[in-house]
Every structure is written in C-alpha cells, then in structure tokens.
Amino acid sequence: MMNYEEQTKQMNVLIHNIKENLPELEGLLERISGHWQYEDLIYRYYHHSFKVYWIQQNTEEMVALFLKLSPNEKGLNNKFVEIFEAGQGKTFKMEDNQNWNKVCAPMVESFLHAKFFLEMIVKYGKKYNEAPNMLDSGWAAVLILYGLR
Image 1 (spheres, rainbow, N blue to C red):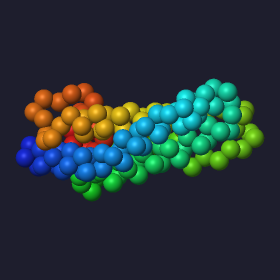
Image 2 (tube, rainbow, N blue to C red; image 1 turned 90 degrees about the vertical axis):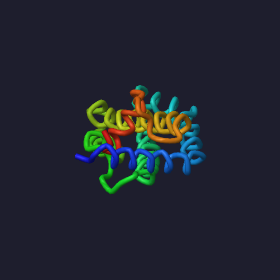
Image 3 (tube, one colour; image 1 turned 120 degrees about the horizontal axis):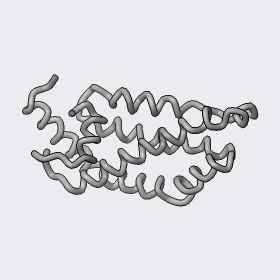
Image 4 (tube, helix red, strand yellow; image 1 turned 135 degrees about the horizontal axis):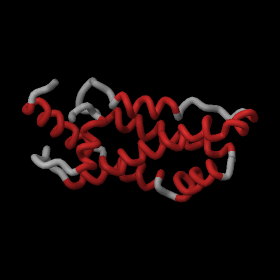
C-alpha cells in the first residue's frame, strides 16, 4: 500500500496526464456519445443486430487512452479489466443468435463501464488542477481505476 505522499504525487501525475490529453479525451467522449457510436450500437444489441459487435472497437479505443494516462505501471483495476476482456475479441457467428445475451451483453457492459470512466476522467480532469483533499465519487472511481484508492 502506498503512503499518502506517494498517492498524492501519483494523483497529480494523473491530473497532469489528463490535462495534457484533454482535447483527445473530449473528442473521444463526444464521438462515442454520438448517435452512431452510442445510441445506434446499444439499439443494435436490443434489435439482435450483428452491428453491436462494432461496439468493441470503441471500448478498445477508450481503454488504450486510459492506459496512456496511467500515472504508474500498475495498469488498470482488475475488476475493470475483467469486464473489459469479457466484452472483447468477439466475432459474429450465426449461433450467437441462440445465446444473444450471453454473447453480446458483455460487449455492451464493457462499453458502458469504459464510457463511465471516460466521462469521469473528462469531468474531473477539467475540475481539478491538483489532487483534492475531499473526493467526489466520480473522481474516487477514477482513482480506483488506476489503483490509487
């Protein structure tokens, strides 16, 4: 477990990394929140359309950016990685239609978790210039993503 000073130092590195990449983060958030990347692909899940498989690319992009921001070598939270991996690497097969929820729900779940973290990273990256003493819930979640809480 890291001490308070090291944790604060890494939080400040994370905030710096977020601020440095804020245009890219905001651009990705805007794009994945748009009609074709959010509304349509979630609809495709409920419509049983193979196009829901395209959601995996958006999730991969978000996670790659999360890794780029990391203030340390720990990687990302194990729970998040498990959710991410369960929703990746899928290619449509006709038999998937028989197990739609089992096959496709993890892709949507992975995307929605990643989107949540991207939203929180952008929100609190704009709000903070240095590590705060009091933690907002969304910022605390970001810290958990990076093993800082």
